[in-house]
Image (tube, rainbow, N blue to C red; front, side, top):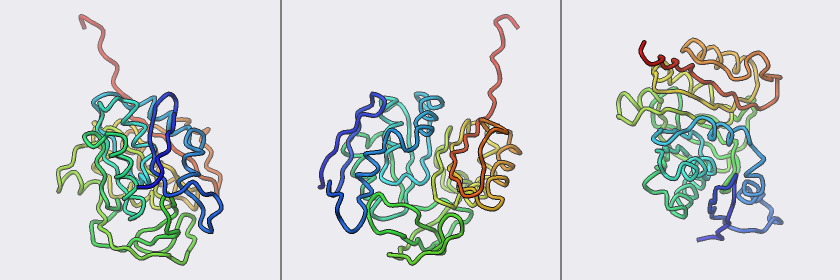
Length: 260
C-alpha cells in the first residue's frame, strides 16, 4: 500500500493511492501530477459526466489510467451507475483496482486489463514510461499520438478486442456513454465499433483526439453517419497538433404531449 490522498472534486470525495509524494524523483511523479490537476486538467470531461450520465446508466471508460474519471462518475452518482473501466498498462491497472477498492466501489466499477482496438487478437502493448499514472503508451507498435516513435520501457503482452466483439461475442452490457482517451489510437477504436455506434442505447461519447492528419475528420464522419451530433459543431477547434475532447451526442426524441 502506498500513501492515500484525499481529493474533493466538485463536492465529490475520492481517495487515490500514490506510491510517493516526492516530486524530486528522476521519474516524474505522474500520480501526484494527476491529483494536483484533477479538477483543472480536463474540466470538459467532468462537465460531460455531470451533464450526461444519469442513475442506472452504463459507462465505458476506455483508457482509464488510474481511474480518476471512472471513480468520479461512480461516486457522483452514488454508486447508481455501472462503470466498465479498460486499462491495459500493468502499473495503471494495478492502481486502478486499488483505487476502486479504496473508494468502496467494487460493486459499481469493474476494471478490465485489455486494450480496445479494431481487431480482436493477442497483441503487444508498449509502455513509453514505466510509472503509475503515466500515459502515451501504444498498442501493436511503439508509436504514440502524432505518429511519434518511442523507445519502449516495457513490452507487455495483452489482448485487444473490438467494442463490437465485446458486445456481440462476449455479451458485455451495451454502454449508454463512452469515454475514450487512448493517446493516438482513437480511430482504430471507432473502426471497431461500427455496430455499437448504430445502437440507440449509446447516447453520448467523449473522445480525446490528437489532431494529426485526417483523424478528426474520419472520426467525426463515423459518428455523424451513425446519427450523432458534434457538440460545438463548426466551432470545434481541430487545429493540427492540438488535443481536444470531442463530445458527440445522439439527439433524443421529444416526448409526446399528453393526449396525443
